[in-house]
Length: 203
Image (cartoon, rainbow, N blue to C red; front, top):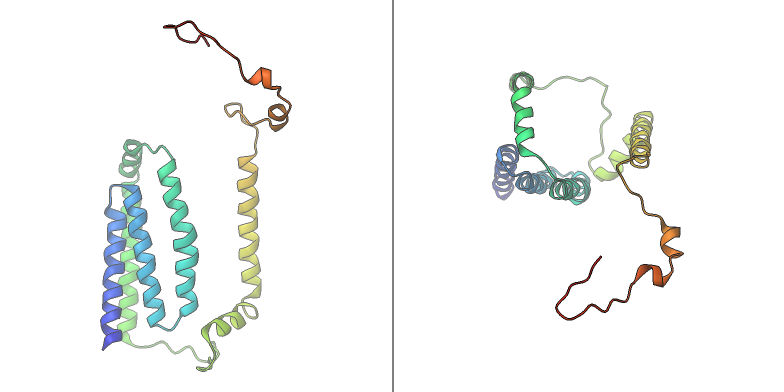
């Protein structure tokens, strides 16, 4: 009974937080609602017995991705008028994608209501006494090893691309010259001024 109440509580908060993430006008508030959705989704994973996925939601998504989004949104000078214009421009594409997602959800609910799917021998049985982290690692590093390595290569290419784009030569950015700052003499950095009383300093 307690697990059922906890499930409906976490599920309700996840749906409400996801809705507020989309409907919030302030991007900072949207990120905060997203963090709340991640926390409650982690609670659902704990109820399902997937503690490892719950830890990933907390450590990776809340601790890294959502906080990164929050800092980026707070530091960037975002033109909300331009964003709203872009939303109006691509409204048709967004509505088409939303309709496709709703159709997929309806088909999935109908398939689930029709009964289970017989998968035959495609899925290997998992020992109930084995921890889910051990079972996940065994499948990930045996059957899906090449897929896992491919995902690592994709992330490596993205990392190298971000570094290249960051260190490219730009004429509108003034880079810091460490050697020039270290070799600068004190008399070149400071000036002793004795202005008369009632007058300011001329720069």
